[in-house]
Image 1 (cartoon, rainbow, N blue to C red):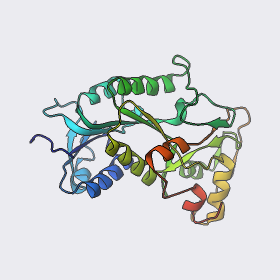
Image 2: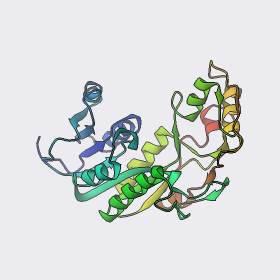
Image 3: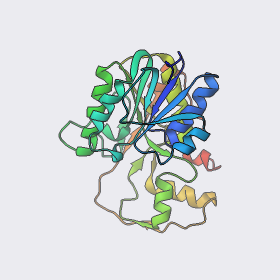
Image 4: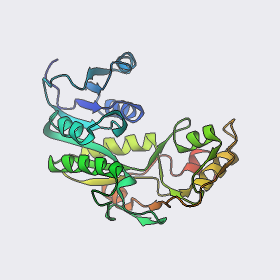
Length: 269
C-alpha cells in the first residue's frame, strides 16, 4: 500500500453510516483513497464495488492516515475501548480523528431536556455506557473528537422498523426518543472531519424528540409500511430524554436534510 495522500480517509467499521461517509468524503475530495477496516472479510466484495479498499482490523498498520473515523458498534467486540485505542494508532495526528458515540451516555431518564453540556452517566453505573465513555476518553486524550449520535434510521432500518416487525413491544409508549437520519449523521461526521478540531464533543440529533407512541402513530399515518404495529405494553421501564444540539449546529453551521421523522415520512409535524 502506498503512503496515504493528504485527503485519504480510513473508516473503521464501514457499515451503513461509514459507507455514506465514504460517499460524501469522495464528493468533497475527488481522487482521494478511502480505506475500510472490518472484523471479517464478509463484506469486502461490496466495499470494493463502492470504491473502498478493505482490510482486516487485526492486520499490522503499515501507514497512518490523516483522516480516520471509527463508527463500528460495540456489539462486535469484547474490548471496545481497547479497539478504539488501537484505532487511534492509525491516525497520523494531522487532519482529524472522529469517534461516533451514542447519546445513551447522557444521564437523563425522566424525559427531561438535555444538550451537549448535560451530565453524563457516572462510570461504574452501567456496563453499556461504561464501554462508550471509556472509548470516548481514549479518543479525547489522543486529541480526537467525539460525535454522540441519537437513534439512527432510514426507511428500512431503525427503531420503527424493529417495532413493526415485533408488532407488540414490552416498553412504555411515553418514553421520549431522539432520532437522526443516517444521511444527516454522515453529513455531520464529514463536516467535523473537515474542521480539523481537537478533543471536542458534538451531538447529532434532529431536535424533534418523539415518544415511542408518536413515532409509531406517524408510521401508521404515512401509509408507507405494509405491516401494522399493535401496541406498547410496558409501564415501568425508564423514560428517555429530549435532546437539543443547537450548540453543535451553531458552531459547525450544520442543518439536517431530514429535519424531523415526520418530514422524512412526508408528513407535516
